[in-house]
Length: 571
Image (cartoon, rainbow, N blue to C red; front, side, top):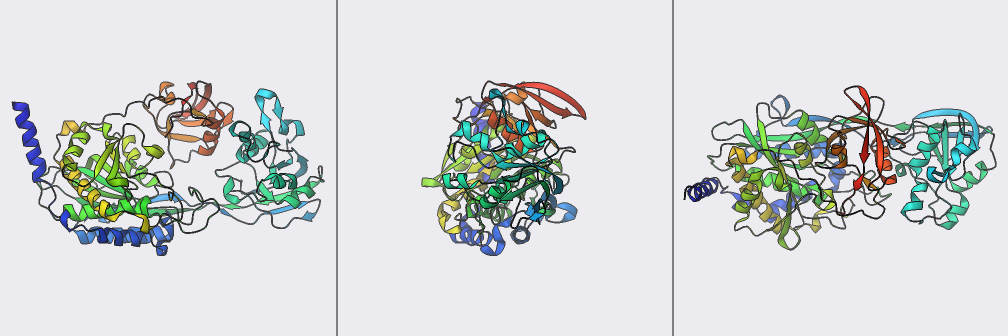
């Protein structure tokens, strides 16, 4: 009987805290917010670019007008976050035996440097240790500039096993490891006739390599094949700049001025004019990101307006966090996790919204509910009577669920995730405001407002961090490589290169081997790891059950461990 009484009392307290102004939320208001954020005037809101700054200023103004207090640095609305801008191609040069080549380019991963040496050809630049194949060793590229043919002898569609031999990053890395001082990449006319693209684009090879790379067209490549032993002068210029972007942080105190808070967040940045992250290769159109994630921002702003206009006896405040640079690798939320604001406020749980504008058939997915005992119960209370159906997801969400809630998980703050699903416009210029379901977004606003209020009143013990369970092994995915079970720290730039870990997956291969947050991976198997792209290449070359030697740095000391790769679960 006592338990029944306490449950009933808990429901009464939660209900007394329900927002009473969500009735003013309209589909037209949400549409207007999305239309502004997803307008061409903001040019895709890429972090570090003017459109993102315009969006941040507008969001802060909206929060102020709603009656929310600033929660950023120095009493303002913002928290500065440093980001690396997309690399830009500069002037490139190639001269062979005194002959200058016109219209040469480079790739984003190239070192920004020059080289002078003898030309040598390594054919396709194939390396397959298991079969004793190494075109670079055979060509003797040590101290030389090497000409490398794009692709493989097996054509443009050889399948994953043979196709990996044609990966441009792998060719550049193998040439550098064999001692080449520069590399010239191009498509041979015969390979162009077989279906390969004639040009190698700047964006086709991301990351950072140790040697300069220039690219040439098919006719130029054919000319260069006739010049082994010639003297080569080459230079590649890649401009890498950083910029400051901003998290936008608002604060709604509790009635008793408690220092605890529930965080409600969404990222506001997107992909600008494409490039890295775009699923429209080669497109330079504005990627407006209406669903990803103007939809989440519009909902958070509506929730802020609803909660700011209510009297509450809840014992926790609310932090409204509009994150910068999510598309660059969760940089905004990761920076906040290392430097939480507002000062003196302790966030005890959160709700993250990312792509909530297309609730298919009135349904939205909630994930990461297992990170706090309170999430399931309070969500059930919040959805009561709402015109939206909740699909509860255990473990990873479709697409991996890689959004800002993971930054909170990294510092053991429980955070749930709302997501309405992937679609054919995802990360493309076609993700525009006309495709969103605004009437159903109104239901999402009401759900999130009620859920936030329920969490504000939840018992402290029910908000304790619960580590997510290990991912189930659903068997290998064809061509997916091995699973390592780690979370990269995208903001870290380790001195001397490498990939720093922001965490490891519970029960995953990395955790089982003893790897942990802060470790800097330097070598995985036979692949030297200078950045995350090298790490991904190493995993693509591996397979479930394979034991790989991992060299890493921990607290300044070099260490080695064996990791048994797992199966990459299908999304």
